[in-house]
Length: 208
Image 1: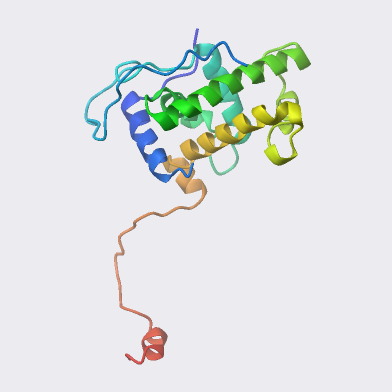
Image 2: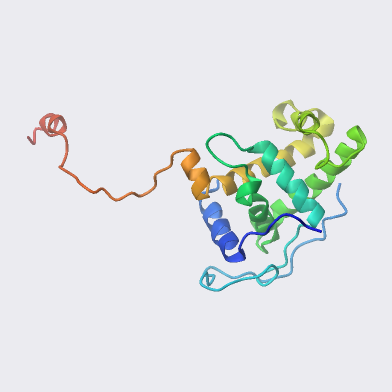
C-alpha cells in the first residue's frame, strides 16, 4: 500500500514546467525509454489529469518511499519551511523522470539505477531498507556519495546519481511557494507607490 499522498496531477505538471524553465539543472528497475508522446509545447493546464493520463509514471510505491526519504534527507523540515516530501517533491521527481523527452529520459536512467544502488547498499550495510534505516545510517551512507570530487572510485557512479537527485530535489522544492518564501524570493511584485528616483541619484546624473 502506497501511503504517500499524491499531489494533483495538473499541479505536478505546472510545477515540472516551472522547474524545467529555471533549472540549470545497477538496477533491474530501469525498463527503458517511455513510449508516450508527451504533450508538446502547449499542455492544457485547465484539464484535470490522473496518474497515467499524460504519460505513465515510473516509480513503484517502494521507490516513491525511498525518493521521499532521500528528499527529506537533502531538505528536511526546519523552523522556516516544511520538508521536501511534505511539499510532494517526490511527485515532482516522478513526473520529471517519467516525461518522454530526451533530458528527462536521461535523468530517469540515472535516478532509477541510483535508487537501486541506494537500496542495495543500505541492505548490505545495515540489513534493512533505506527507508527503514535510522537517520544516522542514512546520513552515513549518503556521506560517501554526496560530493563527487571526493567520492571513492567505487562510489563515483552513485555520487553522480546523488548530484542529479540533489539538483532535482532543490529544483522541485524551490519552485513551490513555500520554497520561494524560504529563500525570500519576491518575484515580480507591483509597487503601490513610486515617488521617482532618489534626489541623490538625480543629482549624480545632473538631472535634479
